[in-house]
Image 1 (spheres, rainbow, N blue to C red):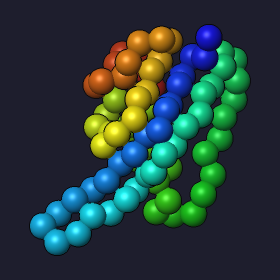
Image 2: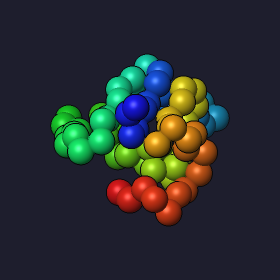
Image 3: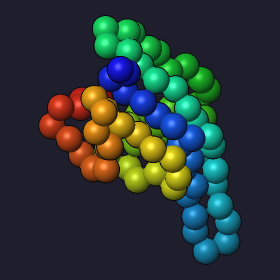
Length: 80
């Protein structure tokens, strides 16, 4: 079983005049003892994705689970 599973995660920031699609259809899993690095240019959504996996930011769509349990808010067993 994967320790972290991210399935079809999407994040859209909205204001009165426009939408910003920060993340779209992000899917991956991390196995126990696996090391993963997020690499990309400034503004591509790396920090947003980390905050979503840590339960610090709500996602617009998709699912995140840690050790088989849904991540729906901040948790004491996840650190970023």
